[in-house]
Amino acid sequence: MRSQIANTMFDFIAALEQITSEEQAFAELRKVANVFGFSSFAVSGIPEPHERIDPYVLLNGWPEEWAARYMANQYFTIDPVIQRTILTDNAFVWSDALKHMTIGRQGQKFMAEARDFQFIDGFSVPIHSLMGFRAIVTF
Image (cartoon, one colour):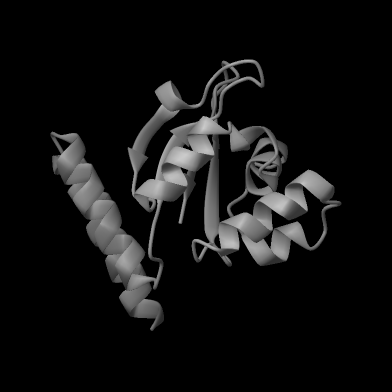
């Protein structure tokens, strides 16, 4: 299994060097998600609380109804995964990282709603630039 994971990641990194379109990037991320058993993924910048998330979303592999609801309600402001992403530079498994966080009533309600769309657990990679830009790759 370990060599399959390594091979998948090396293949993905090699493919990134050849990507020339959003469609190719989407297809490569879909392959990685499938290998690891994830049903969806997203790549997005993280806006400031007063901004909308819509223009920050680079690749959206979420169920259409969930993506529309997430953006319409600006859920990034209460999403515990986003809150964790802001606090760390390290990749994390949601269930491991969130069990050490205090999640308020809004966050708990959000997580229950996300479970309705099969968002039960996941893996996220925070991206922070030296200039303060924050982003996430999440499966």
